Length: 341
Image (cartoon, rainbow, N blue to C red; front, side, top):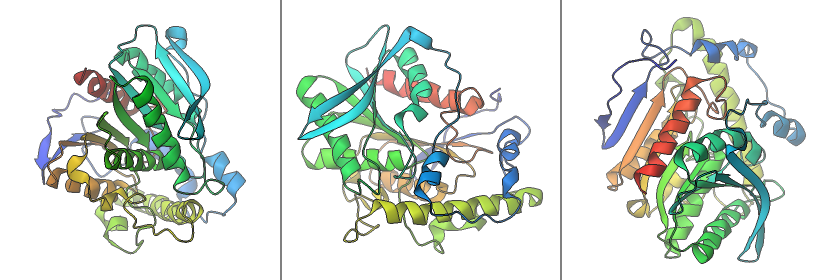
């Protein structure tokens, strides 16, 4: 159950930061017991084999109980635009407010994941917000290297622009999907589009392939109690390995990881970004780069909110039947969607 702690935002370097402890007694520096239970295999260092099939299997979420049922319909279809046929899930609640939509990009380290990872979470958001949601099945690396996924996403935005020009769009995604969402939003702005009115980002990757010895990967910036330090250090190292593998799969030989469309932290058009909310676990290895991106947004004058879930790690949001934090993410995204209607 969510703690009753005062959760007012605190302004830090222009960012509205909200910190949510996992209970009233522990404010920081410990893994949520439910998270810690799932990390028992990390008592020793882990070497990640570069086996694409196994990596893709590991990027799928377990079955999730669906509390929404047929209150939200899910249609598998193709959107055809800009000479691209993009598979999507189109989620439609029983009561629809036509003026706002959510376009969502699933995570999975660029090489894995699937829209169904997030279907139940998105059904909950659609049911509560009464907004339609498009869950994009963009092309995965290495078969579809950058910028293929970005162009799939841009085609979806253009399709909505042509068929529903009055509709405003919130763009969202988790992990690598949030990275693609940010690239799509940037491309859309550069092409003169103005229908994206907010960015809702779950633990975004904002600097893939960054220097693993540099400040964005400094494990010492994650204070943790001594009894959990080694387990978290192994978890952090596992994500360094994932970051290396996914960046190698994702990028063509002639594309630099620091490119602004690959690393949103380096985008030059941040001042034209819409209001942005980032939702992140305290012990997410990508937290430092997400915070750096948030500070750069705020410095450019963009309304930026950073919600930090203490004790949490990466990729918790789809698990609405396991974590109150996942249901809280659904609440926050719902509030953001309806706030601009």
